Amino acid sequence: MDRECLDSVRELLTTRKGQLVKLIQEQREEMGTIQSSRSPDWIDLTAATENIHLLMTLGDSERRELDDIEIALAKITDGSYGGCEGCGQAISPDRLEAKPTARLCKECKQQEEATLKPSGPDYSVGWRAIEQDPSLLAGAEDGSQNR
Image (cartoon, rainbow, N blue to C red):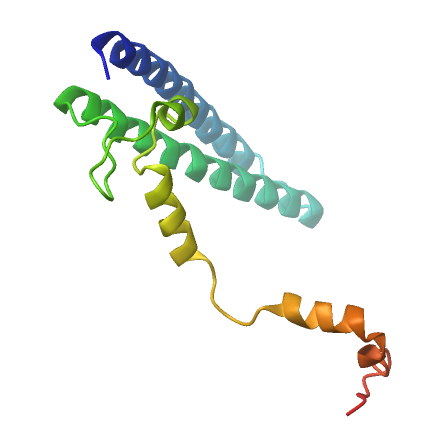
């Protein structure tokens, strides 16, 4: 990747980093406001708790993105930006353009996602069987089963 492209990516990531830091600070302030204004009313407490939970979840997402940005900026600095952490090959420019914080090439990312899929029974097989033979559901409404 040439210097001009790297400078452009660095600027994009630095701008996004600033936005995330500001957003995280605003979320912390909002959580502080919610916590300090707790009402004795249980409905208000429930709503405040839900809002805090939502803000914490959103904050986690932003913090992960911020971590990814920090890693990408460090890689730009040390010259390793654009290399796949899985196979060592170059990540395609299209992938980096779509996701400048990408750490894996498309193939390694697909392998990672395949291994992270939950294991267990394939329930779609059961639904296909029911579609072919709806009588398999007979008695399901009342809890009895046709065997």
